[in-house]
Amino acid sequence: NDGKKIWWDLRPHPFFPTLEFRICDIPTRVDDTVAIAALFQAIVAKLTKLIEKNLGFRLYRRMLIQENKWRAVRWGLDGKMIDFGKQKEVPTKDLVRELLEFVDDVLDDLGSRKEVEHIHTILERGTSADEQLRIYRETNDLKAIVDRLMELTLENVPRDVNLTVGQAATAPSAIAK
Image (cartoon, rainbow, N blue to C red; front, top):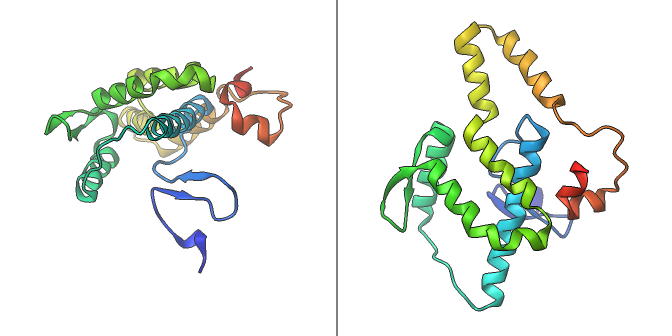
């Protein structure tokens, strides 16, 4: 009876007219968080566009999706995932680049091209998890990791932003201005 108790990767919010993506942790860097949110928005817009044009897309078995999800958790961007169309393993980064190409035609209408293109930076630089592992290998010091996480959390945090929640929710690029 409580919508908050449903633990799907994607679900309608129990109180707001929105979808919740419960797929990954929030990244440490604000720019990365905005980029991933903009990518999720672009995926929804692209799929909506396909449905409105009566175009379909493939549905895959839950077991296969779960396998790729596990691989993402275990190996991150440097791992491999199953490309269902090719029926073989490919580098995860290649699939992310393919996803970016898939949503490219909706980015300008959404006003989020810059934010989504930041995903390329993440692919090159790595994730916060990659950074944490690197620091631990170099220092063997958990405090050094916490110190770096604090630095990264404050990196590119907008100062003196005067936006309403509604404005921020509808245009990720408004946050960066």
